[in-house]
Image 1 (cartoon, each protein chain N blue to C red):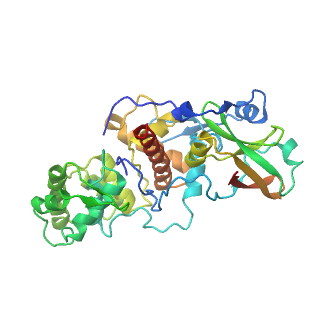
Image 2: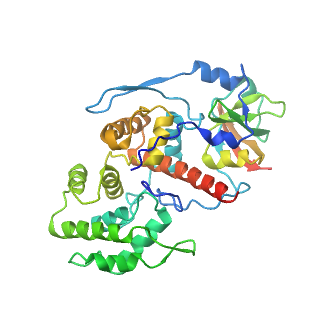
Length: 275
Length: 107
């Protein structure tokens, strides 16, 4: 997890020709008079007072809740977030994700390992067999091919995790399962929460990745002094309270923020690359 | 995904698709309606989207003469298109009491 200083400025307007709201106009008047303070009371942590904002004020806490409602139909199936068909597959899929791995490459790497029969086997595979799958150019859904970074490190972690998964019964309770996963080599709070969210989508966990961290800090939900290395569990508790107050699931709120923020990041990278 | 750079797909399972500002947009309800303007609207009236700063983006819905009828819930895609100077109309699709539904289309 990167702990680099984050840019909290909503900089999307730096490239824009947008004009400021007209002073004294309908919307600026509403913004001035409709301030709504909300007190989030996370379990086991200090209460946090935030400005809730309005759904139409971009990236305010109310905005993110409204977008989560829009993007997550109430009849969404329970497997909406799943990458794998079993807990073993989910662990492998999430171990193959993370920093500097695009989602597309993440999925391609997971499919390569899964389709080689290395997850379904009753015996945990030798790490070298996983490496053999990961060092080859991986076909992406876009039709391109890409190389996976850190194949040796990830293969060792996957082999170790599969060994545990084949030998120990996984807890049925999602939070107990997360605690158990945290004892695995290479699995920290974010990856453990990601696995649990995908496998048990109703569990009130948060995947505090860089996108969620930045968005929640920018809109005042997270304290700017927090970072996921030191404050992961407090951040998660506040995040879950944010979702509860908005009446959406933590999973939907997390997925919405990730999708929008990651799309923006990718668009900017593309813009830089084309200059 | 959860730290992966992305998205090539949405973490909610659907495809993110290719940016196409001229493509169809879902209807959007008018937020923060300005009563004085809304009471003059009829179905079929054509309004416009205008990107404003506050300092974060607000997508105002304005009349031909620049009056603010309200706003819509923005999204990254629409903001991006407006930043690229794509123009959008917001045609009044229905009015029920103070609830106004808008049909969004690039011009």
